[in-house]
Every structure is written in structure tokens, then in C-alpha cells.
Length: 377
Image (cartoon, rainbow, N blue to C red):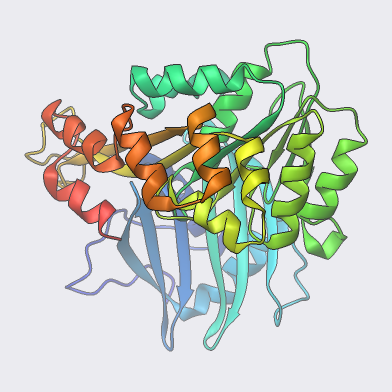
């Protein structure tokens, strides 16, 4: 079959009239861009291929294609992204830059062998200038911005952004770098993958297959005379140890870490084997965040073609900012008690993420249902 198949229960977000695999991929990319999708999932099944889009963080089924297209589509994506077309049994990654729907995108593809054939997930990253990555535009409150700006004035220490996968942590780090990049300083990043290309900053793709991990890359980066080092993620004991040591020796280190809240970062670092006195000596700021869908500005939540009748269009950050002052450092170094840290922070103006979410509901930015959905996961 040369045309897209659909099932009655499957809502088709875009029509595909193409006759070749190449044209189908082009149509999917264009329609995904029009739908503001961040990811395209191409999932082979027994008799067909399921196409799904992640829009504003939520997965939506878009349609099904004949299985006849599968091998050609995967091969075409591999050619475009620079992956090897003769490898099918192991995962691969690739990337390319493309003009899609009159806009420039950095396109990233991950290939994974599955029981019914190779799956591909295509991520669309708008190649937007860093000036668009302002904290206010991302959804941070003026109080948050003030605390972040104050921490970024330091020349040493650790600034960490916490949250689950897909919560916008890397984008927040790049917003921080966009401010520092205006200054006459040396900045180097270690990323996996590189999501935004930043003029004037040395960016390194850290990947184990090439022998560059976050920890080994961090050691090498110190010898490059940097003022600021951004590490994509602190995910293991060794990276945590090297990051803390780097922050102690005259560098400002920015990174992300997977925890449910800002305060839980302290416990996570202790679990990774970092001594409490080192945590107290290095951490300057912890940002905890999530992304929530925002109410459509065209229909105000009623539902229209712009928001695909969901009532939501776009996303905003809800956040909590955990500033580490001298008194907090003493609490961390003396006991490291999470409850003691939370009690002190709450008494000195700390507002948890749930309060920021409630405020954004009051402002008409999002809905209570969306806050509950995001914070319960």
C-alpha cells in the first residue's frame, strides 16, 4: 500500500499523500513542526508503523503507515542524520540541520532495534538564537530571576538544575550560559547531545563510544583554562566527585541532576558519596523545575484548531529556587538533615514548586488539572 492507512479510533493529525518514503518523512517533519511537536516516534509493529508525536510534553497518536515503508524510511533517516545504513542490530544516533516549514531546526535521531524492526525517535530543536532563552520567557518569576542572577555572579561553586527527564533542565542551563557568554570569559560545555549551538563557547559532545564521558571530559576541560564549565548531567559518583573538586578549585560549574525537588539534591549528592562539608562549600544554588502546558491564548482553554482542541498551547516552567546562604551551609555541613534544610529555607522565603504552580493558575497561565498531572508524576 502506498498511502497512509488509518483506524477509526485513531485521530489523524496530518494527512499524508506522498507516494515515497522520502516524501512521507518530509511531510511528517513539516506537519510535526506545524503542530509544535518536540519528538516524532516511528514505531514498527507487526503489520504497520505507528506514528506518534509528543506535543507540549504529551504523546499523541498521529496515524499508521503500511509496513512496506519501514525499511526505506529508516534508511532515509540514517542517510540524513549521518548514521550507518548497514548497522541494524545496535542503537545509533545521528543529527542534521534542516529548514522545516520555513524555520531552521537542529534535528536529532535515535535508532533502536526492537522486536518488529528498528524504531526511530526524531527530536526537533528550533535553532533559535540564545536571546530567546530569557528566564522570564521560560516562565521564571522575578524572584527566581533575581536569585539566579545573583548566583551567576559568582566565579566559583556549583549551580544545579534538578528535575525529571523532559523538564527543560538543559534549556535552563543554556539560558544561564546566554547571560555569561556576553562577558569576556572562557566557557566550555560537555553535553550529550549538544542541543543548542552557542557562538563563542566551546562545546564538546561527551559520549562513551568516543571515550569522552562527563567525568573524563570534565578533567580535560579544567586544563583548557575555563572560567565556567557546563556538564550535561551529574549521573554517577565519579562525575559528582570531579564536579565538586572542579568547583573548589576556582571554577563555576553548572550541571543538571535527576531528583524530584531542589532540596532532594542534597540527599542525592550524599548518596553519591560526596562529603557534606564539600556540598556545603560548593553549592550556591539549586533550581527544581517542571514543565506545564499553558492555556491556549487563542481560545482561552475552550479548544480550537490552534491547540488541536486540547485547550493548551505551549509550555511554561514551574520552579523552586533553593539558595544556599552561610547559615544553610552550616546546617548542611553539621547534619545534612533534609528536614532541617527545608525548615530553614521555608522560614527564609523559600516557595515550593507547588506554590509557583498555584500562582500560575491564579494568573490564568495554566490549569489546576495540569499542575496536578505534572507534580504527581
